[in-house]
Amino acid sequence: MRFINKYLRNLSPYKVASHKVWEVNSSERSKILKLDWNEATIPPSPKVKERILQVIQDDSIYPLYPSTHNPEIITLLADYLKVEKSNVQYFASSDSAHEYLVRVYVAPGDPVLVLGPTYDNFRLSCQTQGAQVYFQEYEDGFYWNRERFEQRIEEVNPSLIYICNPNNPSGTMVPAEDLNLMLSKYPDIVFLVDEAYAEFSGVSIVSEVNNYNNLVVSRTFSKAFAMANFRAGYLVSCEENIMQISKIRNPKNVTTVTQEAVIGALMDIPYMNDYVKEVRLARAQFTEAIQKLVFVTRVYESEGNFVLVEFSSPEIKNKVCEYLAENQIFVRNLTHSKMLDCTLRITIGTRIQMQHVMNILEIYAKSVA
Image (cartoon, rainbow, N blue to C red; front, top):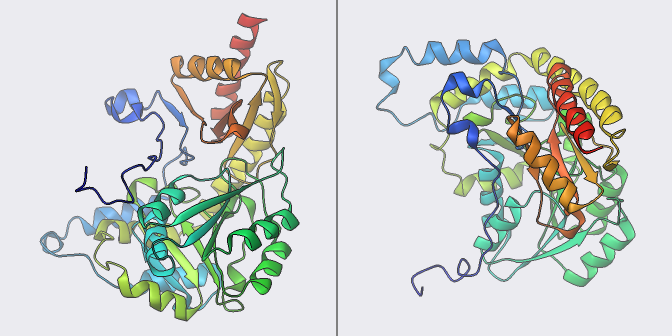
């Protein structure tokens, strides 16, 4: 239709996974193990609920727009990240932050380079702005090759480069030294490093934001902090970049309840750290166990709260995915790259939860033996 934004007319949507968890009542929901969106599998810190319960008792807040600048959040984020308060800004999700960032740094027709296969929603954010999105895929086995990536940079000459680190869905990492080398070599290109899973890897480039004015880091509260429902994320960059992005940021889009939840989470970092430790232990045990199944050909070494599992054929992959769903376990069937044709991405929860997944998989393995 001629009324539709021309950039949207032939756009491929971001494909979401099953959301059956919202089609049932709360009692049935507890029987579902949702391992398809990399959400946390436990509630957030009790301090989150405490803050929410306090604020919702205040009737005066309901007719008001939320606070447009919450200094407590900024201070807590700066302390958590060990950066200056001028280096951070919060948003209604990291997805929202990405959209603002693209609007600031990418004009219609500008080239954007994405290291993939990766989180596909960023591609959508760029294309709706009219950007020309180019991909450089990892080597076979999700091996990182800086020389080949730099060749692609020279070919495309992008305005912006997107690197998810650890990468979703593979869990692999681009080494910090390579990021630093590219930031120095290409000072006129903005590098967006998506660190949605940085808490699980324990590796971050946030400390470099004042050394490179072409570096922007995005983070989220949806993963390690167990707050996906609140839609909260943030950007970390040099003061000038934060100022420019904040110019177009809608400051009233983060609800009061979300702001209070974020404060509660940041006041209890040890709770989050304990969950991260549990996930790492579960990830190691699950990886060791699942790769023994006869129809599993590879489990990629992951630094995120998920593993990418490769099966002997697309047909086997689909059957495993269907069997798990029949047993109320939902995992991500990936289709947006040929590299992923035989893979499922499985979010890692607690050791007890992942043992349950293995029990179901072993039953299936015996049935097809």
